[in-house]
Amino acid sequence: MKEDAKLRKVVLYDALKKAVLTLERRPGSDLDEVRLSEEFSLSRTPLREVLRQLAGEGYVELRENRGARISEMNHTSLRDFFLAAPMVYGAILRLAARNARSGQIADLKTVQETFKEALRKGSGTDRALANNRFHEITGEMADNIYLLPSFKRLLIDHARIGMTFYRPQDTQMVENLSAASEQHDAIITAIETGDEAAAEQLATDHWNLSRNQIEIFVMPSRLDIPLGSLSHKTHI
Amino acid sequence: MKEDAKLRKVVLYDALKKAVLTLERRPGSDLDEVRLSEEFSLSRTPLREVLRQLAGEGYVELRENRGARISEMNHTSLRDFFLAAPMVYGAILRLAARNARSGQIADLKTVQETFKEALRKGSGTDRALANNRFHEITGEMADNIYLLPSFKRLLIDHARIGMTFYRPQDTQMVENLSAASEQHDAIITAIETGDEAAAEQLATDHWNLSRNQIEIFVMPSRLDIPLGSLSHKTHI
DNA sequence: TATATTTTTATTGTGTACAATCATTATTAT
DNA sequence: ATAATAATGATTGTACACAATAAAAATATA
Image (tube, helix red, strand yellow):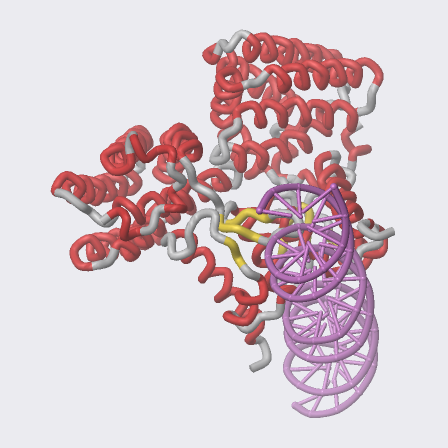
């Protein structure tokens, strides 16, 4: 019972991150310090430090004297997302192909198996989290402290968007999912062979597929509705 | 005397940021919580929150049970820097040309005048800070939440590198400085006319100039020395 | 003398009490 | 009845005391 506090802090940090990524906590929703501190058996002091850190990483937003909120997502951020993602991700994958270490490649393969497994019989959450982890590893491979901040910020909303379209509604979405999985395989190959050009091109393809999926799903009439206000059930 | 605490918090935040950017506090140096809390008349609780936030933005690094440090700079980060900067900055300037608002353009012109003034009779610090502010504004113009994290991280080290080469030692460096100033002017024009291609190209030119300056200055023999361990005087 | 072990000191991390601020409801004045 | 104002309640922000940890010094042991 001595160093529990530090552990609980990590638990809180991980739990909040996951809750954001999976849309368990929806964009724009409030975070109550007292409730959180009770739920995670932490006093408000370390809790607030965690919130600050999460804010710095883009998971939550802090407002003066008015508590924290889960980061917003709206049609503006979607537009910004698809503008920034291909470029940053292209650079990350190119660097990943250049710098990846064998241990990391092994990790990537493992996660890809997990992702395929999730596609077969996992939940939307499982798929989104596995996909998120896949891309996180490519970020670690790239190992560029200046690109990582934006890349990580992109991954947050990539996961949240994924939580929507990883629950396939029709045959085309199912096809897109398996296409995404095949692209992951191709990405692994490109990284393994150090083929930077191929890796960069695959990034573009991968994000184009995502954008396609989004367009099927939410465009164009719903674009003015903040994603946070849509419950999951509305989508099904 | 009532809401002073909040003010002092902002003062601390700004002071630390500036101290990092100007190399007043050197990369890798320790931050003592008690000393800082005394210096800024804040208790350690809000102080630690500020440190967490600064860590999220890349100004400082936190280590478990071992306090905060100013973010490191070494030859690896320099390499990463010049790899990431042209791309991110190119995208930022392209978007700035696309989205800039007239008020922002006016601000940019004002800061550019300040920069020129600093070149004529200001200190190295003045120049680096004015240059930093110039680029910050282009970031605000671009207005893309996914690109900004990396851009801001780049600006930190851009300023710190600048603190070195904005103290010109020979005629070539002076020429480079005035070239940088002219590029700023060209950037303003490109943004004002909405010429995205020109803006993007200018970003490349601008960073190439910076890299050039660095190479004159620290390459290649000193590359293995962490920048933080070099005092200013050593350079002159 | 060199190395391990212990004790001491300094620094970071957490819990709690209280102060300041915001949001809501109640009250008063027009 | 409506609008402005004041009291109330809920929530965030700060200070300080103490606990936990790491670093340094002192002691013991080979």
